[in-house]
Amino acid sequence: MERIERHDVINAALLAAVLLGMALVLLFGARSLFATLGGGDEGEIVDAGPTTTVAAPTTTAAPVETTVPETTTTVGVARPANEVIVRVGNGAGRGGIAAAGTDIARNSGYKTLSAKNADNIIENSTIYYVEGYAPDAEAFAAIMGVAPANILPMPENPGIPPLEAHLVVIFGQDTDLG
Image 1 (cartoon, rainbow, N blue to C red):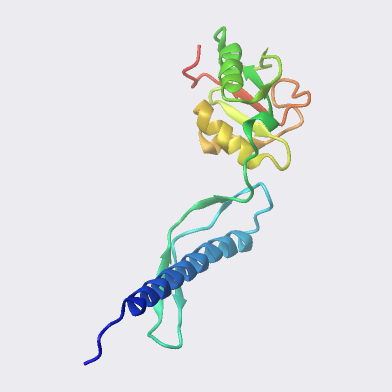
Image 2 (spheres, rainbow, N blue to C red; image 1 turned 135 degrees about the vertical axis):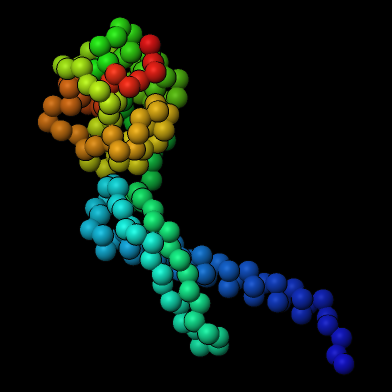
């Protein structure tokens, strides 16, 4: 019987690591493909749809089935906070909300513009973003406690003048600030 050499064990471990890496690349590639087929544009939140089973046949073994879970994927990467300009508005109808939100944004490293009361009182806090800043809006929403469903492209009138802001957050009655 042959003796197993140490280099044989190392080679087997390296081969296993390479195969695992390739499987992960295939999994993430499939996620990106599903997001692309879903019609998403860069910077847009894309729903990959319901759970999908993908068969990955190989030439040396039986097909392996991989389940891709239902996910929401964002195309793009958030910029460093100090490269994003934010303007905060108060649509909650309680004093001090916009100033408190501006302080949080500034303390989190974002560039901020003057706080302002919104045109109207709104129920749910909302973050608006200019084109290409969807990933930044998601990162900012996590800091501000704004639901991902309330991250939207910048409308013509977000409730306060956006000036040169990349992101505008209007805090609504659901906010805990103030």
